Image 1 (tube, helix red, strand yellow):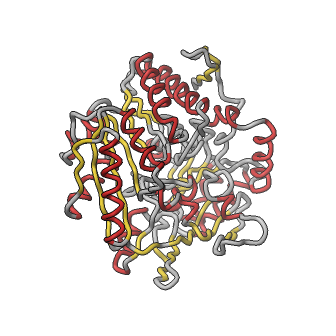
Image 2 (cartoon, helix red, strand yellow):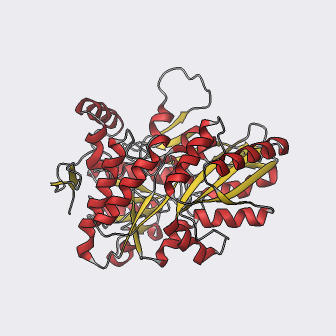
Image 3 (cartoon, helix red, strand yellow):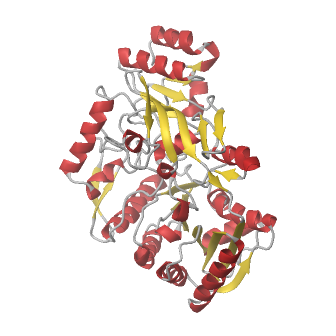
Length: 479
């Protein structure tokens, strides 16, 4: 419960209509896109940097946790207020402040929706490259906080490759500009540290991003394969030939069935897996690249190859891919997914392990992933109303991540560590590694009020160790 005096202070700086303390209204903000939820004590709908700074100063004086929050589309629990406190909502800060068509940059507030930026600059022949599947809803500020990726990050890079500078508010309420404008920066790369810090080091209030020219030619192809294994081998073959497409996405048969039933995009439902491949550039190069890719896919058991002939057809193919997770609601109302990353050559092994784990726990699993860079998205499908299934879902997810790590992979490719993977950080990092990260956190947030309980293992949260199905030590959590 937030002290009344603090609530009054917040109203004075943000306005009466911008401070929410009613329990019924707070429920709207208890979750993000993950399966965990916790009620904040208050929500502040900030509209300016000055308001964000004032809220942080109030929180610092009263030692109240603050969790910066965007659209709530995050998938690792990063926006969940697990220790109560203030959810600092910045979606009212949604102005595109400046577009420099010569320098090809834009200055935006954190609440600008990802896709809206590309739509706004399209009249200048420009676009913003990072494109999470939730780009119609997610915000640039949230993307910067999580270092989000997307289908086209294989070629264009993730968010950090496109952020040139940020205005940030630290835990003491001070406002700073951190810049990454020049490639050969002298001194600490503070912008690089803060992008991807998941709200644990700062609140972001302005972002300067790089824009790119819309390529003159784009070619998009759908290809079917008998199995996930053959599709995985085809992915390795494409990259092995020195070809790096703009995007190289895979979906398994479960996902294809759900997507086709919803979008009618022409996905082949008799396939064991499909690949969605895109290349861009000048017309001559895209034709040559797509012809080479077609030969490679055919040589690796690809069939039913179909290239989009119109922009509308291309858009429909991508609508199916980017709406895939939502379409899975036709099977079960809830999903739980991790975004572990493995070397591309290990895709067949890890996907085999994922399938075995799903069968062991008798849980349906639908695979959607950025195949080109080995970024998995196994969706464990379930019904949250069945409370008995939650421990099984979490244990299955943990075993899948353990398989990723054992195959030389990493815990997250784009969703962040947040709440859901914090307990697994010691699988990857030593005590010295984690200690170094803690010291960075202490520099920016010495009192520990910014998004506490995220990224680092939290000893205050209950955990038990189970014997994993493969004999591995798997940590399962109930709280």
